[in-house]
Amino acid sequence: MEFKKIFMDHYDKIIKQLIFMLHDPYMAEDIAQEVFIRLYEHPSKDEEHMGAWLYQVAKNMALNRIRSDKSRMARESKAWALEGLPAYSPFELKEEVMYAREVLSKMEERDRTILIMKHSGCSYDEIAQTIRVKKTSVGTLIARAQKKFKQMYEEV
Image (cartoon, rainbow, N blue to C red; front, side):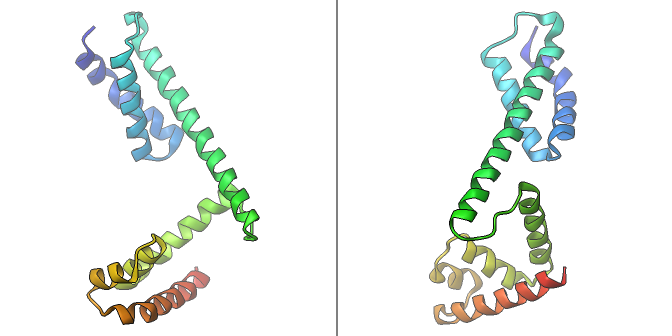
């Protein structure tokens, strides 16, 4: 059977299955791509059951990703505990991220940019150039943005 035809016949169904399992359309697309790469590199000999083979590979890859994410979250939680920070469950971490994103989305563009850049490891020079201010003002702007974030976060 021709690869293009198999792809056209099964891609939408595989994506729907993966979105249902992962609740993340971007991750589903990544895994679907990996599934079809695996098919291309190691084609199944059983053309009659090609759909079943694809669904099984997709399911296994999704479950592996879920396990990997849970493992990563557990390691991160342990690392927080070692640093004396409160340990959170994976659900709590996900919830905290949701709240943080919600607050960031409500902030002014400049404050949001400052906080994201600061916590992404950008230097004061890089932040100053991006928001077009003097480098000497960046520390004050960060402090103000963090204060606003904290106030807004406590309101959520």
